[in-house]
Image (cartoon, rainbow, N blue to C red; front, side, top):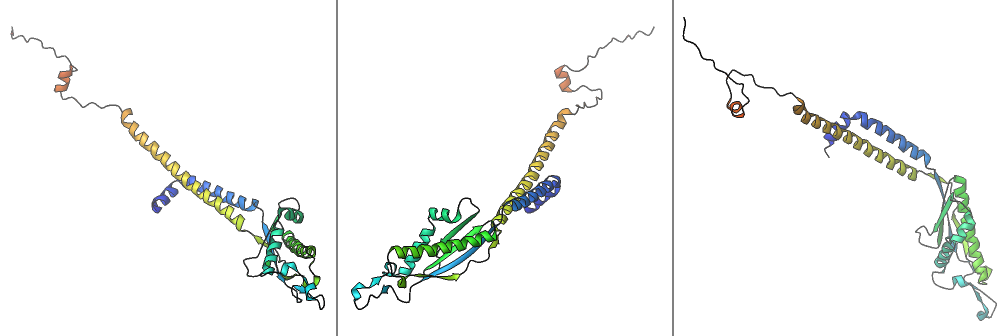
Length: 253
């Protein structure tokens, strides 16, 4: 589409384009204000093995030593972290932590970090709600880790310990979603403004063409002035006037 042609149409049909554009701006502002603001907080812990190692000594009898089953294989800390992550992602656990409603939600993962990290990101309708949710999820993860080791009868001296890396951060507002919705509304409004101007332009041009075609049909037909001579087409059609000849008398007496 030619830019200058488009600009000319908008300038010519400004009385259509401008109100539509103003309405679009109002719609975009309304969308921005109507979409609620979300707040996001995050926290991170890492799992560390005990200084005593995976085995608790039972005296001189090495065969009686007790082992922490969660540390009895290679990559045990990473695996333990994944177990806790999967547990916290269980819908039943999420319901216990969050309760009813959709005012807050959280995600759990390793944050694409190398190691036994557990990263919690919570999003809520208020800063306090998001931050408190991160703390609850991290506390539940620590409790799940301790309960699993106890259920496996692991010696307490060999327990895997969760170490806080990042405390629940102050929640920050996320305006990206609101901005995207408002931008979409603005773009749609601009398209509507441009389409309205072009539609009115097409309608006006169609009316002009229709009026130009109807003008010759409505104009009365003009007949050429007669100079007294009969045209061949008039004689052929019989539309010429009848001419009567009278005899002229030559007798002058």
